[in-house]
Length: 357
Image (cartoon, rainbow, N blue to C red; front, side, top):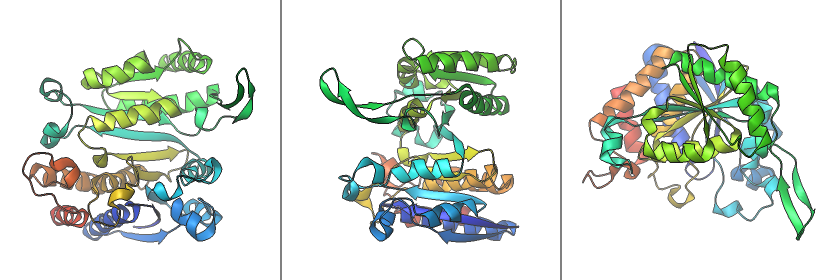
């Protein structure tokens, strides 16, 4: 089988980690008899530097014409002083909207081999946890009306949180269907004691829950959820929440696994084409030094094979290879900790995973 993949390498360590994922995909393709055609497009700071905008039209067209999209990371110190409407991060909102990607799936799994890297107590991590956070991606405060106005104390800035029933139902169904494929347990996170948008969110989710009687459904306020994730993460299986809450909680969930450099994500819509990316940033402080952890991007590529290309065995193969390399004790600097293990470089870790495949 042949597939066309758009590569958005972006900034900082983005090119290094995407190149690592491409190596793994090519190795997998050779093993299973597939062919991947890769085409790179500009996004983020590098796009600003070259063409003056963070998301060129050519990039959007290229992604729309592809079978799926693999993204590295965008942003960095170099562009921090730019206005909000032309910052590199603006490209992420734009490409998600252009591709109709309203769902973000973020797994947060504690690998047994990495329990010592988790900041949580031994009695917590000994039980392990495997969570999927389903985050709404194209609504809420990140896409609401914003601007400046005269307020009670003079000029003030405002950002608007707004959700429709349609948007909530859409993400809610993804969450319930995800729960049905796992342990049939779903927790919806909101702030319904304060926010009107959250009250609509909760009302809509309750109505959906009636359609999924097999799923153990619960609600939780976001402040309590932030606490519960570090107190007892194994109580969660699937979490569904809004754009901003999901942004924050998924980063918290990633950190308790031991390293933000380990976790992938999938952004999906109604079409099979999705966009896959590690949840970490561009890490400009180590860019170009071959120090980055490529595993999150490699696992994102595995998610791409599973969710967009329908290559389940191939995805399993990559994930099993990562498990085997970690079980063997190989580590990059971010997960080496105080084990005395000599950290592998980005390219060395990629080679280890290639060898297992």
